[in-house]
Image (cartoon, rainbow, N blue to C red; front, side, top):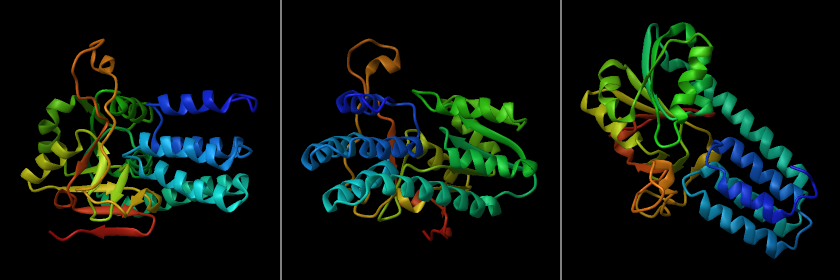
Length: 272
């Protein structure tokens, strides 16, 4: 965006973004603070508070906002910090992807939901060991369909299923691997809606569920009982112009459904 764009317009575009993943959104938020660092501290932090509330569910975005707000108050160089945050995100994501490679054995079959850039990278890096990836479409924005198309384009065998037919994928898959949008202090997980039933069905078949993330997604100040309410999005995304609907992008997944978590520091296998 042009440097002369009114901050309110840039802010409005951020608020309406329901397509970008948490990594891209964190970078956009960082750019916003960098671009408009000349604003009064109070005004800039007001923007930050609204963004923090809007992106409940995305720990990386929210932690980036908190770090930038603290920097604004203390008078730190926002441009320098913005660049440092970008490098840190990319480094942690790369290292975490390397750590999860140990999950992939010969002829691995896995199931995933939504489109996590880290999960995608992990699949691509271990493509020679993968027999099939079962991808759930991920309603309502179809990020999973986007992942399926990407894998097929790369020559990786994948099967697309509706979220409602996840039981079929769970019977066939060896394990579930998803990204995460937040990891809370009690090791409960925030991820795309549909992850809770996916993990529940996998446990029904005595199969393991793994999440892949980075330390910058951890929100240790929260647990499954006190996490902020998720935003309810437009009913038009569900095919109706108005009316009553529940259209939330995220949900909370209790710790007992998560068997292991991978980040840049390695793996954490959870005891039940």
